[in-house]
Image (cartoon, rainbow, N blue to C red; front, top):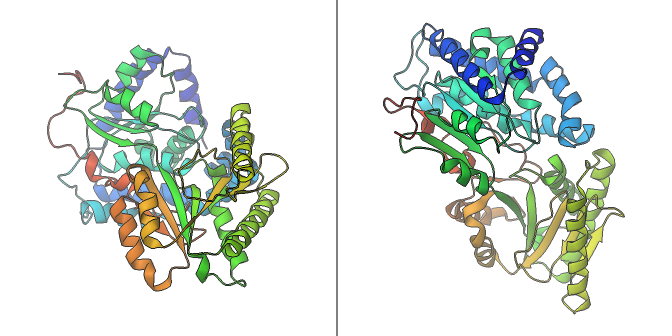
Length: 441
């Protein structure tokens, strides 16, 4: 099924990185010309089939990703399978078509819109969670813009499989995607890669600043930077019969993808609870994390990551020894950690299933506590607020939260989730001539 693409990849891999970019650009320019006769309806329908393919756990691309991603990214097979099942559940072909219509308007039957993308879009992927990579590669194609893609260093698998899946569904569209891995230290290759008229980057603040310094004023850029997610629980409103179910769902939010995504919560704020209620919640969450570890073990971590977890556990125990009523509940190894803090001070987030719990008196204090992270806030999971939920959600959206949801749903955003509060397609529409030849002109 994927033999043709793999043969092409093997030939390209024999080239130098700079030659690979030049060859890919020439191929993409040729492939783009073949799209001129295609209607928008044909293109969107083909890409919708790609999403249905990835949503099917029995498809070849899903099976191969499940087999290869654990070794490439360090996740366990169980975690990859669970993460893909949850993440792809709402990503149907119909949902993709609705996204296109909502952003660009009705799809003309047999024709094409006036809104199109740039002659070429360079896409930089990051992290090791497959869903954002799929979306980043597919979206420029909706606007007839071929994609030159640098895969994430932690995941050299997903991008190629996405390209192969597109080619399986529609060979002409598949020819409009080129995967070109290279080292970021290779400045000559990077310069050629970032010469495209449109550049889409997912990465750290440092990566984005570095890319920004290489772009000219006439280039379109779309950046997705570092983000964090949190949770808020009205502990006083949670009865004893509901707490186990609640913490089981919150443990899923923490554990999926080993807490390495921008929608992985790093802190739960417990509103209005007594010390006894907070301790009960912490114990229940710890039990849920332990149960989840047995079902979906955490993957391997680096020595530095393990040291960071141990250090933050020790720091919390030291605060407790100093009389600050801090509690540490943890696995025997570093697999999971729950720390109940005496205050809501922002502290280091070691990740890899490490969650802090902090008491806050009421919702105004909750908003004031979260406000300092407004610039990097992605998602907030809410539980127990009943009639106050709508007003609290509005306040959180005003702070910058782009996703607010129920427990257990944080890692399953809809296809039209506005990452970083940006439109997914409209930002890539070409507004005029924007030649690739000299990005600094």
